[in-house]
Amino acid sequence: MWVFIYTPGGYMASMSESRRKTRINRLSRLEGQVRGVARMVEEDRYCIDIITQIRATRAALARVEEEILRDHVEHCVAHAIASGDAAERQQKIDELMDVVSRVR
Image (tube, rainbow, N blue to C red):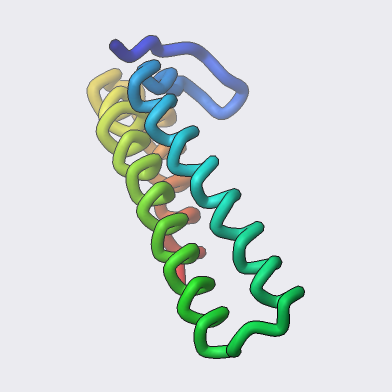
């Protein structure tokens, strides 16, 4: 269930509890992966092994980012478009384009 609330940036949908828990679990695992990479550096492990773990961590973080971005488009942006409010729609489009342009 999505709940729409007003924020200074416009309307946004509150993430469903099951999706929130899934994202938090993934981020907790990522936190553990980052600590593992730090431990590898402290232990002076083989550089290629460290780089491999860093890449795996970055890929996992990118997946969480993509899921949250998808939620934003499916709910927040879709809500702005459906609202019929041209200013709100343009604001969400501008936000989306800004965040997409920062992705490398």
